[in-house]
Length: 454
Image (cartoon, rainbow, N blue to C red; front, side, top):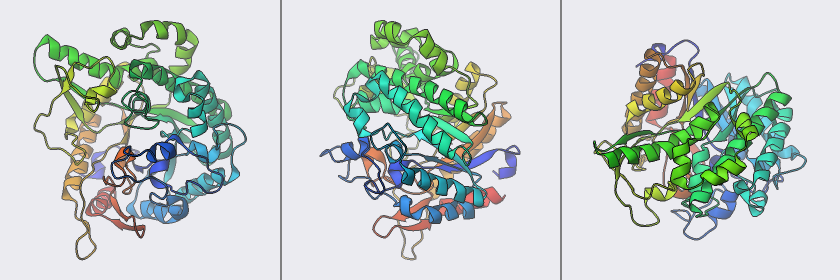
C-alpha cells in the first residue's frame, strides 16, 4: 500500500479533540464544560483523572504543529472548546480563546497543513447544561450563535468546518447510559437530546453559510457496520434496531429530512417527535452539506436475547434492551473493539446510497493498544501499524468500488485523555509522557511518514 494508490487530492490528515488534549481548563477566561464537571464525579473516570492538564496542547501547540508538518500530514482536524470561546455558552466571545485558535490555524497554514475545525466535540458549557443542556431546544439556538461568532472571527483562516462530532455519543452515552458527560440516565428521552443536537447542526450550518459563504461545511457521524449473528427473525430484528439507532436515526434526518419511523416506534417517542420535530426543523437539519464525515472503528454483530445490568452495551440503545452484542472471534484492540476493515466500506456505501453525489471523508479511524517504552526510549507498536495499513487498504477498496471517499483522518495524532477511560488508553501515533509532556513518535508515526512520502 502506497500513497500513490489513492487518488490525487485525497486528503490524509490526523485528528484530536479539545478537552482531550488542551489542558489549561482554568486559564484565560475558559469556563467549565460538562466534562470538567463529570470528570470530578467519583467513579466516573476509570483511572480517577481529569483533563485539567491532558497534553498541555494549549501551551505546546507550536510543537505539535511542527510534529504534524514533519510527518507530512495534509490536514489537521481539531475541535474548538465552546467554553473557551463563551464561558457560559453565550455572549461576547473571549478574545484569548479566539486568539489561541487563530494562532493554531495560522501556524498550520504556515506548515502547509490545512486546518479543519469541529465546532462541537462534546464539551458543552456547564452553564448550558445547568439550564437543561441538549434536552432543551434553546441550546441549539445558543449553538448557532456560537457558530456565527467563531466563523466571523476565524473564517478567514479556516475554510473547512464540521458542526458536530458524533451526536450519537452526545445523546445516548451522555443522556441514556450515563457513561459520558453529563452522566444522565434518561432512557428514551435521550432521543430528545439527539434531535436538538441535529437541530443545532442545521442552525449552525445556516450561521456558517450566512457568515462565511465560501466555507465548506459538513458534520461527522460515528457509524457502525451492523450484521445479524444468525439467520433468525430475532437476529434480523436486533440488527435492524441497532442499525436504526446507530446509523439511520442520524443519517436519515441529515440526508433525507425525516426520522425513521421504526426507530421512533422502538423508542416509544413517536408522539414527542410528531409534536416537536417540526417540518421547519427537518428542513434545516437536511439542508445540503458539502461533505459528510464518518468516524469508523468497528462492526456490531448482534443477536436477540436479554442483556441484564446497567453496564450492558444495550443501555446506550434505548428500545433495544433485548439485543445481545456478539464477539465473533475477530482480533480486538485494547478497547475490546473488533477489527473489521471491510466494515468501513460498508458504512461508506450506506451513506453513499442515501446521497450519491455527496463527498465522504473518514474523519476518525484508529486503535488503542497498551504501548510500552523500551530501554532506548522507543515505542514499537506493530499492531497499530497493521491496523492503519489494513484501513488504508479499505479506503483504497472504497475508492476502487466507486465510492466518493476523498480523505482519511487518523485518530489520533498523540496519546491523550480518553474520555471515561482517562489516561489508561493510548490511541496516538505519537507517545506522550504525561509526567514530562515529552512527545515521542512511535513506529506507527514513522510508518505514516513513509506512507505519506511514498
